Image (cartoon, rainbow, N blue to C red; front, top):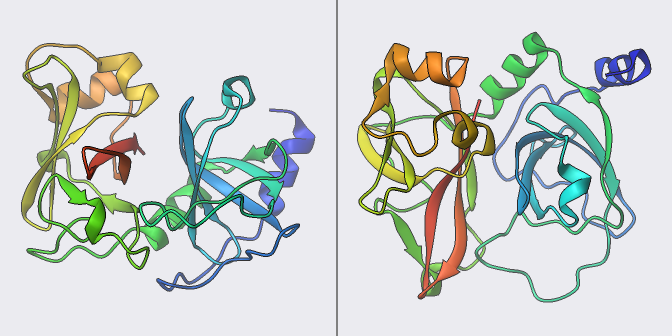
Length: 234
């Protein structure tokens, strides 16, 4: 990253207190500055640094996000909505242009932001409003979030393959295990397709870092249900 971009990222003012439900700017033409939490060829998820609200959007051209990774800072203007709101994605935004990368948060500032953003964990609390692996589309009305950041414990996170040999994560949150398809491009590149279970030290060694947070979101609606997915380990 160039020195100019590093200075720009250092000047980004992060929200100090995050209150669930705080609205973000939404008028067409309004400019958002977001810290990326998850990014793939299909979609990116970030947090608006002014309000603390989570946003998600199709990535658009894949090459525009080829070099964007979690903790990058991006800026863009909002375009007018092009249709009715999607109740499965109430956080959706439509950029008027390809988001511009403006730098990257330093580790200390990133840790502070993630700690403020993480959902409080309570025994028995449902993840994304449901205890099961998915949510029926008919039960979605746009009033509940479709993406959340949760803390993970090294004893409560396992990566493995399901019966179809697809990579999945088993995440314990609120005292309840959740089996989630793994969509994190970095984790898939490093551990995807491995047989057996990876957890604790071996998992951290394979990833190259110790995960402290996970981005969990509802995926595309299929057969009337939106399945929970793990988009990123941070």
